[in-house]
Image (cartoon, rainbow, N blue to C red; front, side, top):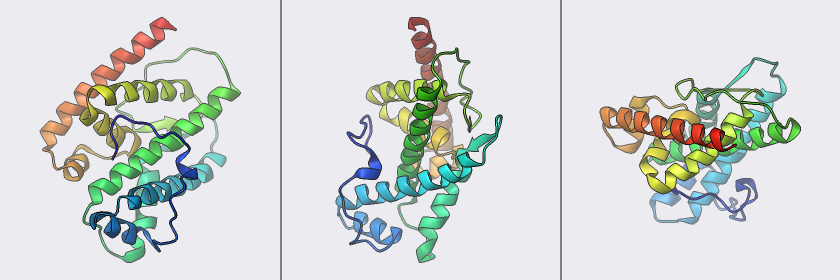
Length: 208
């Protein structure tokens, strides 16, 4: 996972060819063997799958419906990894990529919603509720994404926890398992990250 940086182009348009890797497990094995190009290919595959699932879900949404990020990531995970009927050894890295891809899927959607409907105020983002309203919180989500980029520059570990927890929908136990940290450490990092983001987003609202 690349901390503190944003891609210079749409992840779906990355030039890395995936033809050399027949399935996701092959990408994971290639990455473990030291093939750095497999990271971009794996990310592009995750992004594309999550985008397709999100698009299908959003088309059937009604006002007041929610997009459950946990369901999206887990569904994509099962579809992609279960191809080989095996659990990849570096599941944490896979989930980190999936969470990052989910972040871009949701932010892309929020940008399109924001462009369609300018103006209006916003409420505080409930970082404990790992669900994103289908259309009502686009502004909040864009603010969160911006603040998260700033946090990543200051503390990449805290930003990673937010991606895994908020965008990936992972529990504290799952994050601890994926990152190799203790559950108490993950909980402390999540609390610190929430406090920092809450303050940063309120300050942004004040400046606006």
